[in-house]
Length: 112
Image (cartoon, rainbow, N blue to C red):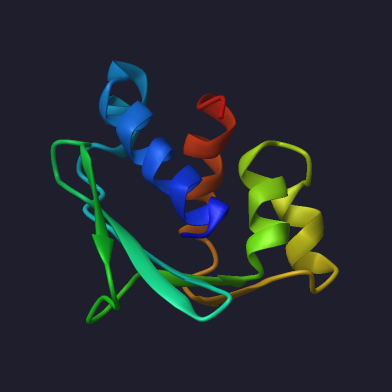
């Protein structure tokens, strides 16, 4: 299993344990799809701010992150700036780019 996928699972787990993150995500109810080297999985945020990791492809995600495992691991560990990476084409976002800031906010608060 890819390391980036494991880190996304850990992000969900740690986020569900954090009242700060749950409060930040409360009411959003969004879906973040990942396509990491062709492997598809997603995070579904519930209205109460908790999240679920789900294998496969979501019907209508808010946005999709398309990246290599190697690059996304660096983003998840805080070694790469996701905004600069997007601007320089190191990965892609399809869908609502503005809502991707929700994920960036969570990633900054969770130390992996």
